[in-house]
Image 1 (tube, each protein chain N blue to C red):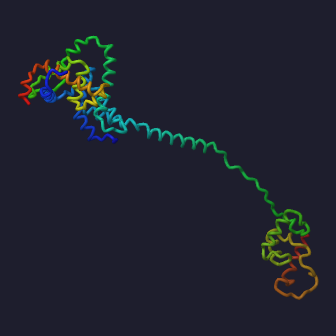
Image 2 (image 1 turned 45 degrees about the vertical axis):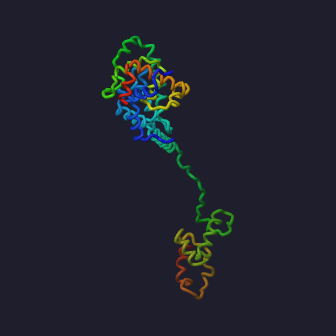
Image 3 (image 1 turned 30 degrees about the vertical axis):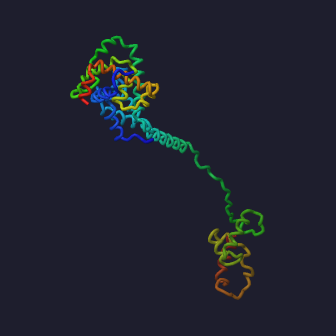
Length: 167
Length: 165
């Protein structure tokens, strides 16, 4: 266990802020505040464990779910909120994928598949860490991940040959 | 069960990883500002509390000092030597004689009947303090042994005492 230094904090913010905001977008409309509170809570810790990234994802998840439950009662225009063009990704040029299409594809996935994909692909968590975060087994997490990726591929309309040629 | 081979999924994995998640309204500078505020707030009341405690202690001590009673006067009995009591050597029980005795012992020249003692008595209390029978055989001519025993030196004083008495 070690204390949080400004350099470590700056690196964490640079590497994980975007992925954490994307992770929190699944549940609430103000994911930036949730992520900021998570980082503030991290800086308030006296001792920091080595698995600080999974800790951040857990804090963000709990806080986002809490905000989502409190907003659900007040939310009247859920369709309007869903149609809100809040970009989940920046740009997307050069990847062959459209950011908005990917956003729509992710939105269309079941919640558990979307969560596992975001945590593993952009958060960098292992399937064991994702399983502990979500509350399932590692194999279940992997199964959800593969299923979600398959659905995404179908939604995005990319053929097997296109991806083979790119790789 | 996946519909696609793992290879193709790896392809879409790398493609999806190429997309950079948007940070939205996440303000990095605001985050560090709030972190600094939180760090400052932890010990914000430490020094004010210490100052208030010391001020209260100083005020309490000041009140106690103001309410402290003054010094109690100490009464002591001091025996003052009376001139009449010194002329009667028989009054050994009186306090003046008792107090005077140590003084006589301390004074090397305060020997009864000595010239210096008589001189001291005259200087302190006047010629009236001279004893009547201070010089025995004063009417008989005596051979002076010293200047101090000379009748020429002492007779005028005795005559003046007798005249006054």
